[in-house]
Image: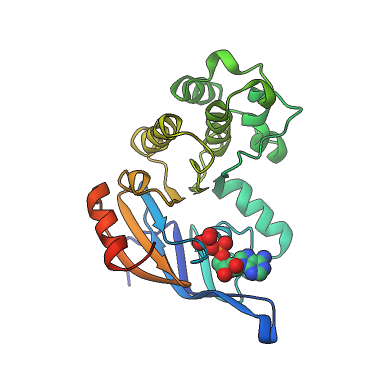
Length: 247
Ligand code: ADP
């Protein structure tokens, strides 16, 4: 058929992930299908152990499913060799972790630029300056992680995830290790990256306040998506969690 194909940035079909074998096997994901559209912030909620981190790692190509398909920008990643997968991750994927995962011996500037350094790519200086200013790090670029607060370290991690303008950024409990005021600042930065740069972002969170900033919320329970909503208030999200018994 002739026509324009609108590509979803992430397409996962019937993803199953089993850890271990035999009697001790754990079904962390039991057939999850997710489609992520560009320029949206998607939140993934669910109780501890429901499979959120497993799903994120599989969608980001950091882990492989037991079965099922994952496409990033149209490329099936589950069958890629390690080198090709690494290249695809460099080009298409940013990741923000709960515990920042910065390199302690590098300055904030070098941590932010690391994905480009590793890929042998030249930074776009205007974009870098603009990003660093929006994220509020201009006067901290020469500091090492140990000289920065938790909130500042997460800002560095966000800038690092955004600097290569990846197709999609995954964030796994990005505010899980921060106080409530700092969390709010970090969340609004993540929301701004969607508004200002059209960044596609997928975020795992426990926090209904964080999820209320998302355009779409997926609810995971026992390895399955049990509900999906559009933009919802904190109050509505709490109600869904109560109704679905997802505490
Ligand atoms: P969540 O992020 O929602 O807390 P996880 O994806 O971490 O959930 O875990 C889902 C399930 O898989 C849990 O039962 C957990 O104990 C199990 N699990 C996660 N990682 C491993 C692993 N490396 N080995 C064995 N079981 C695991």
